[in-house]
Image 1 (cartoon, rainbow over the protein chains, first blue to last red):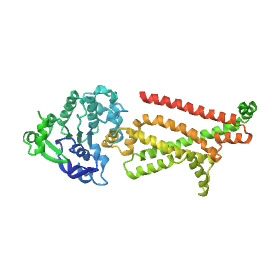
Image 2: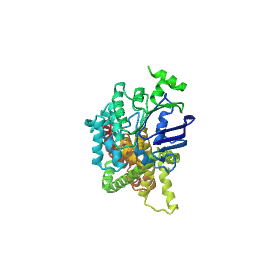
Image 3: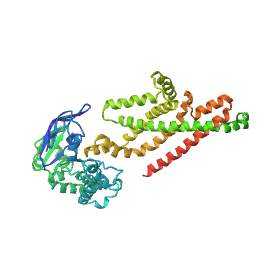
Image 4: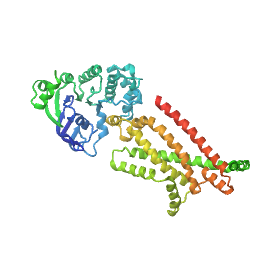
Length: 241
Length: 222
């Protein structure tokens, strides 16, 4: 579903991704963890080309996005992203947030988009907030709306870029609950997170990144119990209490 | 001092009010069309100023820095003398519209650029990630949010445009300032002519200022 081959990316002199090579199969739940500044976010943002790699190839759903004439807009409609800062459109109601892209980008009929939007809002438990504006919602509610907005594109792949990192602690669980439920639907998920409980619960595979490299990968059982890489061991000893 | 504003001078001004009215109409015409031109240039070059491609941003800088850093008077006079050499014959009011419009467009584009920059980068990214094209995301997602910061500043530019149309006086443009200048130049009745002209500019601009204030307050609430 997603293949990255020898991807490199630098910002100025900062070499953020170093020969990153990885693969995500259809329906797989991949969790990416690692210390801050390890390149996790940049890596996930290369999957939908919000960052353009300096070299290497990215192939999503059979299309090579690193080619000059790649069908970027088409692929992005299949690859929904949930951001750390939610990035809901503040000048639109919750319902409009969910319908604008399906209507304008995917040419779905307005009523149809609204109908499926209500269904997804129901699923994240925010049906009654359809007419509210994002600023009237808590952080956790905003992020659940953002997930519903992503789902209303009917994507094949969901990318989560630290979806709970900007949330107050008491709101993290409500977002994770939605994500866990989502993980059971068979959608392909790539999730950058610091939530180890979530990783253990849903991940088919865990990637550990540090300094722009993938240093370890394996099942959660393998990774959390018996990591081989020294950096990974240090990292885990610091965060698991 | 009283002599400057003598009654008979006011009477003469009143008798010739038609000329002044025509000047005012010209001023308003030039102001309106210059405003439209400036807005169009402002949007185009404003977006150019935040465009992902470097060479597009460079074009924005050249335009802005050139027109902001040379006097409008020189630009207008240059157009007035240069265009005939290029065999472009247009009425002097059109030169006024072009001159003031292009000059103000530089300021407008800065207004648009900073307004767009004030919208968090994540908004554009969010749109792009949903499959919007760059322009589509700009139009539906970024610009509506930039409106709040852009509108009041645009209002101030519109006011400046009204005042800047007086540059037409330098090129025999037939606007209010020119009429006032030439009328009083003939009869030396400077006092009533300039005072009246000044008051007319003030009334127009003050009304616009009030309107812009209203917009600002609405923006703060909405």
